[in-house]
Structure formats: C-alpha cells, structure tokens
Image 1 (cartoon, one colour):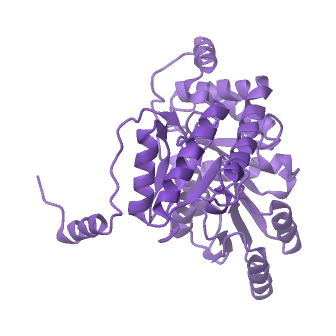
Image 2 (cartoon, helix red, strand yellow; image 1 turned 180 degrees about the vertical axis):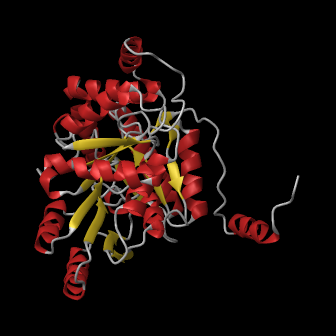
Image 3 (tube, rainbow, N blue to C red; image 1 turned 45 degrees about the vertical axis):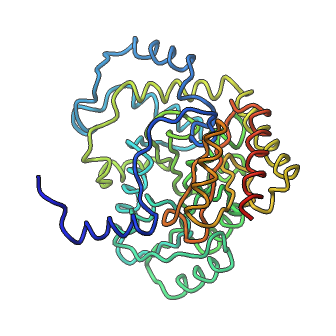
Length: 385
C-alpha cells in the first residue's frame, strides 16, 4: 500500500494540530437534535408502506441500470417530476441524484463566459463548487447585505453589454438558520434584469402551506429563474430537483454533466419521493407541529436567558455560538452524556470564532425534550463563562 504523498500527509497533520480533524461518527443514541429529518419522514411507516404499493405497479428493479439518457429513465421519474412541479407550482422539474449534483450541474452549465454571478458569501459548498466550474465571473456579497448586492448589480449592469447577471442565495441558510429578504431580492432582480436562483433545501417541508417552501409562501414563483429543491432534509429521502421552465429543463438534460454522466437514482428512491410528497400534502398537522416546536424553542431560549447566544432564526436550524472548537465539543459531549444529540460545528466549516452548537428541530421533538435540553445547555454555558 502506497504512503500518502508528503504534502497531503502534512495537510492532514496540520488539521489534527489545529483541532480541525474530521472523522466519521458512529451511530449515536439519544434524543435527536442534530439530523435534517425535520418531519420524521425517514422513519415513517406510512411512507414505507406506500413505497411498496407504488413499486408494485411497476417493473421493479433494484438498481437504475444506467444514466437517465441510457437505460435508467424508468417511468417513475416522469410521474415524480410531474408531481413535484405541480406541488411547487413550477413549469417543470428535473430530478438529480443529490442537492450537490443539482447545484454542481446547474452552475457549471447555465451561466456562460462573460456572464456575472452575484452570490451570498454563506452559500452552500455545493453552490460554490459549481461556481468554480463555471466560465462566468462570480462575485460574493456580504451575507444578506442587500445594499452591497444592489451596488454590485448597479456596477455590473452599467459595464456589461450582452452579459447575463445571476443572483444566487438560499431561502434558509444551513449553518445560521436565517433567511434573506427574498421580496427585496426579487425586486432587485426585476430592476436590474437579473435572473434569480434560490436554493430551498432547508425551507421545503417547513414553510408555506403543506410545506411548499418560502418561495411559494411569499408568492415569488414567477420571479425566480430556478429553484433547487433537495429531498434529504424534511422529505426524509434522497435526491434533488431543479424547478424552472421547460426550456431550462431541456437545457440541463443536454448540458448538465452531473445529470448526463451518472447512474440514475434507483426506482425505490424515486418511489420514496412520491410517497413523501403524498404524505406532506395529506398530513397538514405535521408541518404545523414543526412550526409550533420552533416557536416553543425560541420561547424557551428567552426563559433560559439564552437568546443572545443564538443567531436569530425562525427556521428549524437554531445555532448557539460557542467560540472555540474545544469549548463547543466539550458542551456537545456533556449534552450527549445527558441523552441529547446536538452536533458541534467546528471551524473551518464555519469561520474561526463562529463555532457553534447547531440544534435541528423536528416535528417529533416533545416540548419536554426541548425544555430539558435548553436547561442543560444554560447550565453548561454558564460554567464556561
């Protein structure tokens, strides 16, 4: 077995010395405040049973057998994409194997040489990796700073002749749990003739009637050029879809390399998407329960004098800033000893000094669990001060 090249070995050792080293965790037992399974769909017996019923009506295979442009485009894809497009009030939907693949495929294929992309500095790694592969020029703007965004729009619209400007942001940010002023961003896009791309990963299943997401809750469907809906969060499944016009769908099928050159999702995964969307529409109480838990969590922050420690958020993601990798890991370990699984988010995943405990809230968390975990947290952080 060959040794790792010296340069790579040195990088790995530096990460260990800096206390940034990552390793795969074992399965954790405890009350879940860390997974993205916001509605509990990943363990739903109703969904599991419905998947079996859906598959019974098709020529079922264990695998996709090839890419969708070869042998992998089984009939379930067409049905699922119609359901997803209708649910999200979009002209069309195209399913990708993951949210990462969707963002990589979109940003590497759609913006062209000479175009300009303006993106929020806290955009997900999959967006930024896609931007690196793009021939367009990309420029970040300070997180949710729409004055800076407007300034850049004014600058590039005045100096660019035939170039297209794209604005890229998320409706709910994965580490802070906050959200931008989407109404104002949509207005800026209209004023400067820019195309708006929104990643709805952490809004789907959480906001809007039946969990349709923030774009629909705000009535902005027609103002957005493309929406990225991912299914590994509240939908409890896997994959993603890009929503947009039928022309955009055709373009992605022809030019998005992460779609063209990969084996398709297997039938079981697509059937799970169908069952999850059915359940989301059939059970309105589950999204209401999730939103009630978010409200209760914030009330308990006030009761435990913790509000100032948390980034302001009305989403399922509630982040408590605890500076320093050692400190945040210590508190996470103490919470685990008390039966609560809360993930520490370390630098360099977040900037140095912005290390945090990232609480993920779920419809299945009880109010007692929420009260208890925050009471324990208040006690632990007080001892560190």
